[in-house]
Image (cartoon, rainbow, N blue to C red; front, side, top):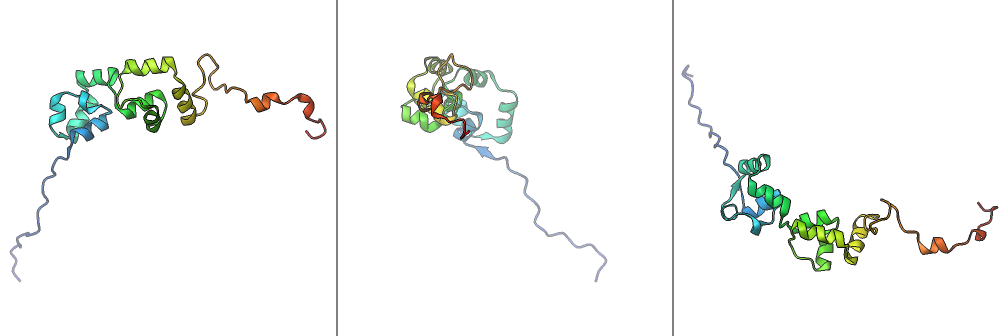
Length: 153
């Protein structure tokens, strides 16, 4: 045995490579409708650090898109309070602007009221009623007080 140190022949770790996201994945993570984004965003892959930078300090175009739209189907369904399937059943387009969403919420078409009621009971009620107030069911309202016996209660 010699006293000289041996050369370390283990494989050295490779430097970490930045993960790239496709523009479609980045747009989905940011909640954006991809065709509405700038051409440079659509054309180049985005690193995770760039995505984090966009989230931390959004540029003007990103702020405008988030505020005015057009919004993707996920965001439209969230703002309307219905599921993505409900939008498909109603034949609503894949993307809508904030103005179009507000118009739907103001008009409250029958399909929207019905789908909101399915999605979250109590939210599809007609405007002007108290929050959480559910319309009385016809069967309960039709019962007379004299049908109940005091002895059975």
